[in-house]
Length: 296
Image (tube, rainbow, N blue to C red; front, side, top):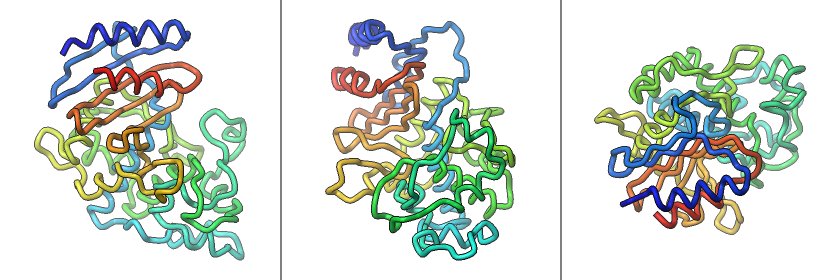
């Protein structure tokens, strides 16, 4: 297929909207079939919330190894951080609730470039001091701290810095060498964002997920976990469709890692395709990208 013509229409549309796309890559049937860059060098850029899907896979690896489980209660591993009289909603939080953004926390809390980020020293204590007025699983609220705490949980249960935990299990097998990931004041990775990757590294991660957790013949994470992670885990009557830190696309079959300012790893099983995009633009770009994908 000639991707150039349809891409030219798409990229011209982005320019008309004054949206900046840095890199686009398409992998199909395991091969890179389209590779475009506004910049001559493939640079590592902030993946923003695409990082969350990497933490989802990290959770899957930890589950495969028996370190954690989907239904274990988060508070059991962070007892030293609990308030004096914790409410049942907090005590009943599980890994599953954290993955699906259904923790019942009162608000989304600070993160990335919010001013409170620069004032709060202990982020774990901050999370457990919040109000949890809703029962876990009762409502969806996108909260970066859910992902952050999952990263801290893996560190606690594995007794390893999560970068060291993931290096031989995820990053090195995907040929992501010396990865960069920003950290909180206590030296835990941000987890919810702050992972810096190239467009090639986006593509290899997407290929691994598309192939059921295998990359170049090496098993990274179980297919059973990914099958759950990349399917809707919210009640059918809810408007949103969300898995375990993966968004479900409008067709209800494909899915994506989705980050601020136009970062996407879009996995299309029916086309045996991965579309990766790195951008730097305000506003939602997904509708335009999805329209282009439907045409290729």
